[in-house]
Image (cartoon, rainbow, N blue to C red; front, side, top):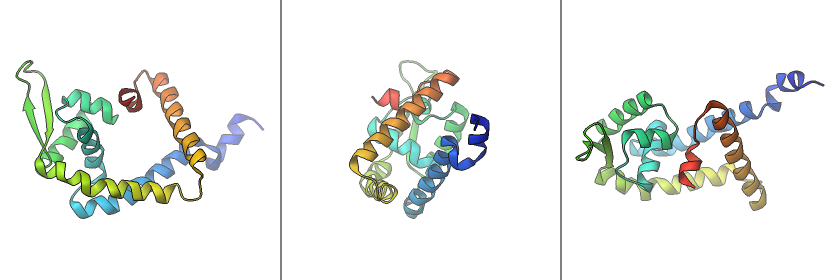
Length: 159
């Protein structure tokens, strides 16, 4: 059987399987975060800012893995929700830094248990070794594809 024939079945495509898994991860997490006024799109940015508050919009965009216009839209939503403030850099007026509000900082302790719960549900039936292999494999897949399109992966910046 050729690769073309093999990948004609979506169940054999790693891309298809990861998209489906991602869709359900997003739904499961948003079911939990929405109760606190946080959408899945906002979640991605909060998570990065909890690790390093005050990033520039450009750096935040890179770390989340979104294009800058998408980041601007997400940041407007985060501002309307009262989760972030954008401030022009005092050193370089072209740069805008993004800072969490006290409300967003407080959400970290509320929402991280939800992330742990969704991951526990997703990994049910897998051994610790299988989860370790899966994590390493997904990181490598991301790096391979990022290199193909000429980009860094968010996991490279967090390493």
